[in-house]
Image (cartoon, rainbow, N blue to C red):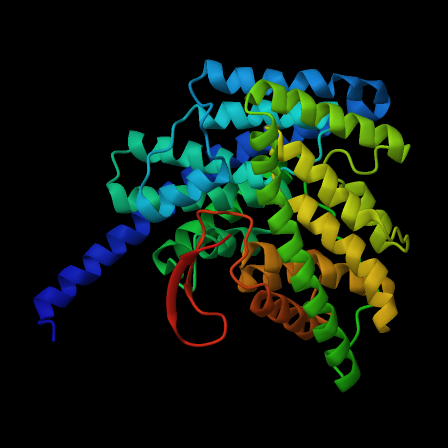
Length: 419
């Protein structure tokens, strides 16, 4: 038991640490939040220009090699993307500041020419690298630097997606599944909240999430329906992860030269776009998600979005995986959910949350995502659908550096990377 002077000393140290992290996390939220706002605006401008001049997709075969050359010129041709940020949190690997401008420019370029990619996964790299540099400038030790990286991840995710609670918990949960970094709770919450305020100051995320008006209440029947959809979403999340990991391996097997891979990937995406007859599957796809939740059904959309994304990112284009995951889940849910007797929009929302959960292995973040995007109606069913998807998705995941510490079926230590 601590003596009174020791208790007093510990209390002072705790207060000092609290104030320190309030200041550091506010600083991270402002810096990363403002950069993320610029990133958001840049992607919106790029997507708007492509919508106005759809013929720019003919640049796809050239844009991929240009991105490869950009990374090579900066000495980052071996960059592992989001996986490196996860390793920085868990194993204290160094993160270079140049990661931020590179992912910033290359992701905007990918969206401009019509590559299928998201923005939130790229935001984890953007925020993580900026926060790591800030931590070094502040002279933080190795342990505090890890918390700073998580703060940066949370801030960028929040500023881009408008979900501060999800962003904070995701930064803590995604690195090591089964072991939360609770020391980062307050810093991540503060940085994500400050980043959201910065985004809202520029007019972003003022209209809430996605409207879902047909959520069901918890009944024996709706419980069974949500669980059944969760099973199917687990299978889809496994398929998504397998295809996303297999794509770069297949490219490398048949096209060892990264430049040729990027050119070939851009050409394939261009051909598929022309065959599809529209740019429904290019870019992130947020407008299509809104159309699907509003009542549209495109049975083949989930498979095509997965194919477009795997061909884009596997070839060496840069961007995130999260919005394509949400797109895939929404398209699958709006097709399969009504067959199970679920309302159209609600089943799309369930699919978004559950496939995200299965692909990222982050059940708590997924439940909060459903709450922040769709509201509290039907929350027990979102939680059940996500829980089933998490349990049955096994040890598959989007990020190869993610570790699952405990078995999904028993309180058993497994400590293995996802695949």
